[in-house]
Image 1 (tube, rainbow over the protein chains, first blue to last red):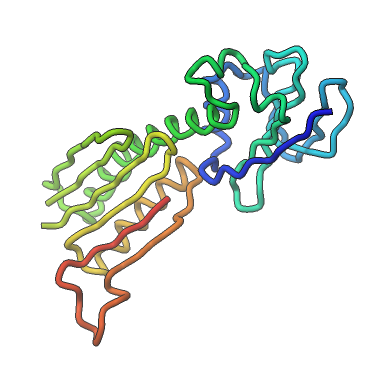
Image 2: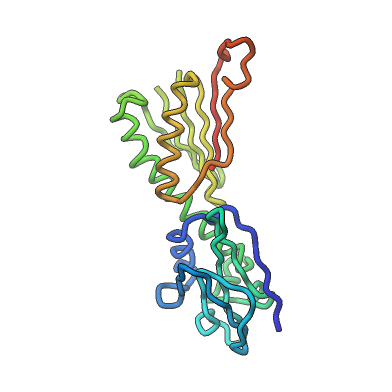
Length: 159
Length: 71
């Protein structure tokens, strides 16, 4: 029996973006269960474990024959924590490990971070700044510049 | 010259905002507008907010007012 670990990922806050990150890594719709109430995870024998999750990749969909179910539990503060067996934290799933030898949790966090980062930038540029100009919070003539430095992207609004 | 800088770490998805040159009362609606949109789009809640006006002595405003916030 493989031990399950629950990981603390404070940056995973959106179910929509988490599902998009899973899809990017190979778990598209139909391979992922989404439950309002947490459901029991099953081990590689099909035996029920004490761990429960709201978002579940059943072992038949992980891409590994000997895998256990993989889950994400929604916490009281709105964040999602991955629940992954020791086995699944290290093996290859749909080629995840080939992309820079990341663990499952690292792969999810990176995919989530990139999608969330892009969405935050799009939201600020396309929604927030035009609305702030419309509402007079910043002047209409304020200029916007986007600056990239390493892995960070900055939007600079000046007037 | 007022400058509002919104920075995103594309590895973690975490965001920061830095407002310079706007008085405390002027910062709050800008912070609130960004906060509301990030919560709606990303279910993000603010993790930190600091305003130099909170640290002023004797009611005087800082020479270069700033506000920082993180999500």
